[in-house]
Amino acid sequence: MKNPRLKGKNVVITGASGGIGEQMALLCAANGANLYLLARSLDKLEAVKEKIQAQFPVECFIASLDVSEHDSIPEAFLAIYEKMGQVDVLVNNAGFGVFDEVAEAKFEDIAGMFNVNVLGLIACTKQVVPDMISRHSGHIINVASQAGKIATPKSSVYSASKHAVLGFTNSMRMELSLSGVYVTAVNPGPIATNFFNIADESGSYVKNVEKFMLTPEYVAEKVVSIMFTNTREVNLPRWMNAGSTLYTLFPRLIERLGKNAFFKK
Image 1 (cartoon, rainbow, N blue to C red):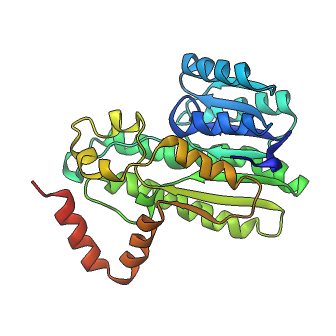
Image 2: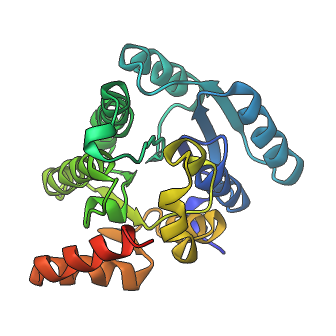
């Protein structure tokens, strides 16, 4: 996959220690972009950095950052600007989910999802928007989810957090429409990564969606291919996005089908 627009650009990716974050980093490097990778695990980031530097002649910086610790984000981005000078693309990829019915959900998990998926994303975005506006150039890519468009049983809080991401992204896109800064929402369906090791410890949710799961390589390729283009949304897979359109038109029918699918024996 080639994207010549990325050559020499500076790309920052949160949640870059594995899954689609790692795959996006590798593809960006293959296209000549310099990278600043953020995640909680420095050891895992080191492994990603080694892969990149073994294959591609680009700069790759890493730093440990938990985006739920909002007060630490300005300092982290100050270091990024000191190293890179400017941020051309920010990919807000860090995410957290726990799939439980509302009655069983722990409030600490509920707060955790909003702290990472929503507030952490907004806090990171605010660090780059002013400079991008001043340069009339930049691309902010927010990884949301198909769950932000159509909810399923056991995803109530996760879906709510991704609805918030979509609302934030859509509003910001309009605010920045004349600035030269692109804003894209990425809405993948379930992806075969370690995400579900935490999100669904029982395996009951995965059992119902595993036949629909996307590979991180596929999702990453689709995202990197649209970097520095004025793309509103990336919806994967397309048929699942069609389901969200049907949900708008026929909500009771889709909810009944979803309930039957997720509570079948």
